[in-house]
Image 1 (cartoon, one colour):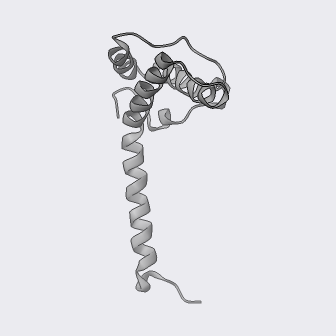
Image 2 (cartoon, rainbow, N blue to C red; image 1 turned 90 degrees about the vertical axis):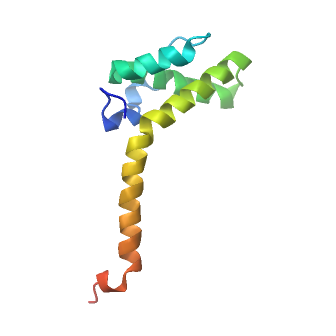
Image 3 (spheres, rainbow, N blue to C red; image 1 turned 90 degrees about the horizontal axis):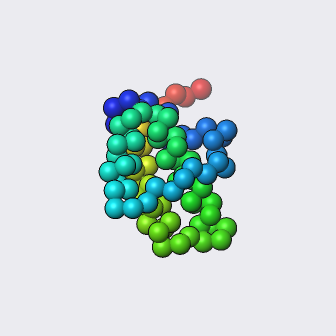
Length: 109
């Protein structure tokens, strides 16, 4: 996880969904996004709001080529930001699956 971000930063608060931040486009888009991720959770919420707005627009009316490229960069940033939490949850799931497969772990009533 990027420094300054909590594990909750992968989730978007409902109050910020539907507000559309300005586009993040241009040659330096990836650098701007990476800098924002390091800047903390508020910057990430702004980027994620834009990502969610683009996803909605994609299904409602479609995206321009520039918006599609921007969404791809934002999707990659979201995957990178959420990866530590995804790995943690995957580990918990694996432990539950192992326990479910172990007949000695079952209780008989």
